[in-house]
Length: 128
Image 1 (tube, rainbow, N blue to C red):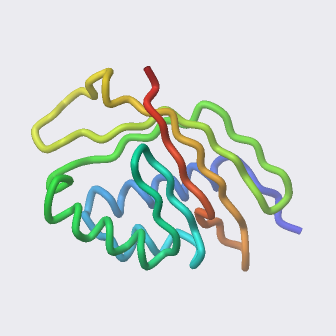
Image 2 (cartoon, rainbow, N blue to C red; image 1 turned 90 degrees about the horizontal axis):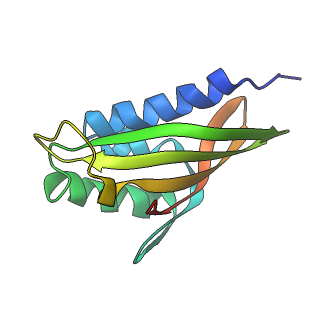
């Protein structure tokens, strides 16, 4: 039996945001389960392919040159499931600081299969 540590969760989040920094929608979406869901204000996506397609278009449009931020505030692991609550946001090209009005509180539901963690569900809402 593998013991899960917060470092494993941090590693998954690091790989997600490294893929974002590279604007690599394929690498980002590969870290999601095939049936993953993403819920954000006004947005619902279901499935890894949908997440990939959404990000690929966004990286060519409104998210071009952006960088994702995520700072876990609470990590709870129950067997092969983890829940991560974080402060998150997007820095657009040229920005050095996240404007308060774009700060989000995010909830990640992660699952472990075949020894690797992946994102089963993601949701965020305005922090303020």
